[in-house]
Image (cartoon, rainbow, N blue to C red; front, side, top):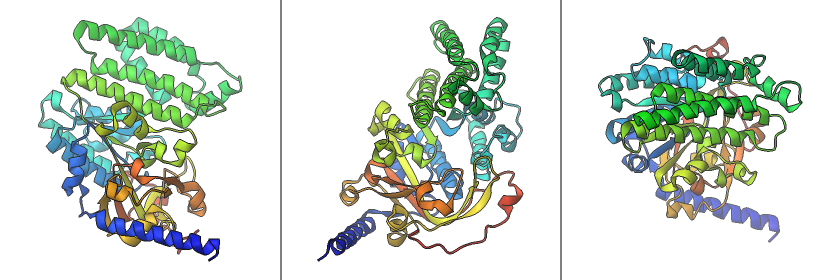
Length: 456
């Protein structure tokens, strides 16, 4: 027998073992994964429920996360939702759901999400969820109201404005000092990447020391408040987080142009640092360890050490959360789909489109799930009975805000070891595009379907 035939026979035998394990140990789910008690028991047993998505534009992923989060709030005392969004934009939503803002509707509260890709949060599913959350919170005492917070770091300009607005009211002299420090960014407020380029090539001022000094001053103010009152106010905490964001965003945009440290690592470290700061702040206010749901892409929440990312020296939120909190306190849940439609752009900053998603590539988890399982199912890949079969890495798809079907393999697939990557995986064979609140003309036109060869 030739080596090629031996290899093909071994591959077929492996595929058969995988199919048998999936048939035996996957669990068909109904319309709502939130009705699956085994999955709810896993999430309820952990302090952090990290709920992923295989794309930033799939309706089913957003709907299932929302319904799972509602169950955790109603039945298991979840305290907060933290999402892959900028802090100041999410704070506007937080004010609305907690009844502390002048916004009259969920649509108004979501208007802070203006930058690309606005549909990630300005969509019908998030609108309906925050409307539900506002109704839930209205029936709760103020200290039991569930908050909505952002973890990301792209809002350098908006965060500067938020710090200055707080200090203008709390301490005008401190506001003057802050304006002097942040004046370093005056020529780059609308284009933070231009700041990173300017510093990397020594074409403009370096703002690193100024943003650190501003964060230190606000941190000292926070420590004084805790020593005096036993806690810091929500307003002071908000200002401190915005100052932290400005400091980390300055480093992030600098790293985009030649620094050795990965800008990806800086971003995910910032998200986990923000999560931990939020955790500590809520613990002070609530008097107990809070329970938090995190919404972000699979590539952020699935443990990077089990993927090609880890082999290249990158880490992510899921990996850092397990390291800092302990794996037994985190539930990492991934989502997958085989085919359907997705809301995505063709290039960065481009208009959103409703695009056809190619069937999963041969040799991928998505193709295996399509060939083997029911249309909607759950599995716990680190269950020893499944983990024994899934010993080797396989291809896994990730669609962000850009979808490039013409370079599907290179642009959207990576190798991963599923048992170490996630605690649970939810598969939906056919999924549909997320509906933006204000879809452009390109989104309203259905893309002409094509027939794609599965092995491309």
